[in-house]
Image (cartoon, rainbow, N blue to C red; front, side):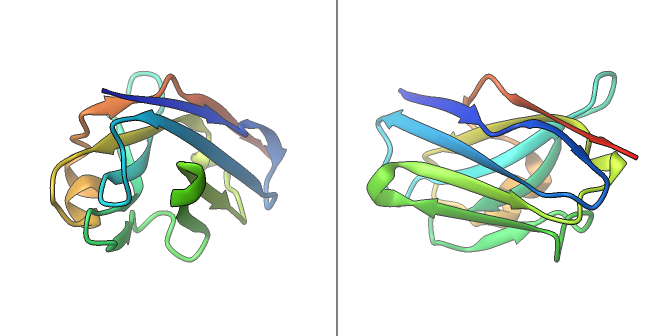
Length: 126
């Protein structure tokens, strides 16, 4: 089992920045694939960024150049640095993890993770 707890969400103006954190516990190590997924009510979940088991990093086209995913294995913490935020970035952001030996792009495209956090809300206002 893997337990994930997100933090760092909030309200910000267009062009602002936020840093999301996700602390993981349980059966997780440096080869565990991790990522961030967002969802707006009434719409499908969207893969935002992911780090595969091989360390490969992938981003959705909509966030490339603005968001940065990173992990601190010593702290079992995953981060999502979000800059130049837009109103369309408004969503509930979920941290997710998977023990599959797959590349980051697989998770961004499929949004298929074994474990999920409860989510943290990000609201970008104009």
